[in-house]
Image (cartoon, rainbow, N blue to C red; front, side, top):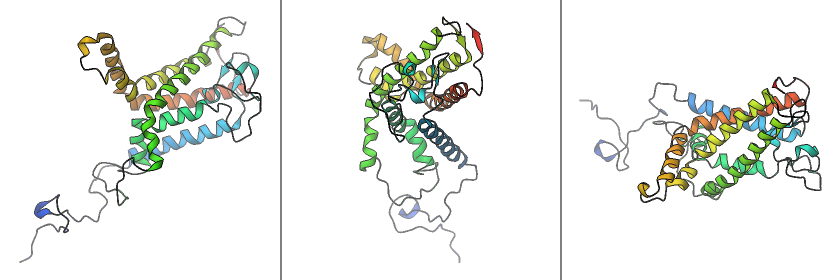
Length: 277
């Protein structure tokens, strides 16, 4: 008589009889579980490639007429920077081609994004495939968590949050300055102003929605009733935190859109449409 009992290995735990089922398939899922990780990989790759090209292009980052400065070059620190684009001053030497003009801000923002809890989940699953999706076998034979030397900086996310907040403040200043450099030299509003404003709002929404920001505001409180203001702020931050993934992707898209628009205007490809001068 042939047995219909599923085959098990000899390792303890997991299934009937103390073993785990031997499955040759990577997964028994029949849905398109691979679509999300694939789109995530393509999205992150697009941003990294576009950002690298623009950062090392070292051109078309400043629109003198309207004082538009792309966030990829802010603050512009190299001696090669256009004087008016260096709102916070320049160092007295020229940067070699392999150094970005925004030498301080870009590493901070990259570290803030890379160590973000959402992005960690995103690239762990899509790039590192640990795991790619629920009920999908990993290609790795062991799990080490975040204990390896290259993974230890992940624990510094809360500190990168403070530094990233300072950079977003600079981006906010970069956004406000062009409003007072209209075509006639006074207050003015153009499409570029609105794009930069949208970008800054999304950057703040992403930054304030950070898990570290939420913890700083209310994570150590023993009683919310004794701190009503912090409780109210914690609630608002929690609302942003619930949409952290959304604001993460929207802010990436707005960064590229803002940079692309300023680059097109700076290169003379298009003209900034003025709404009010």
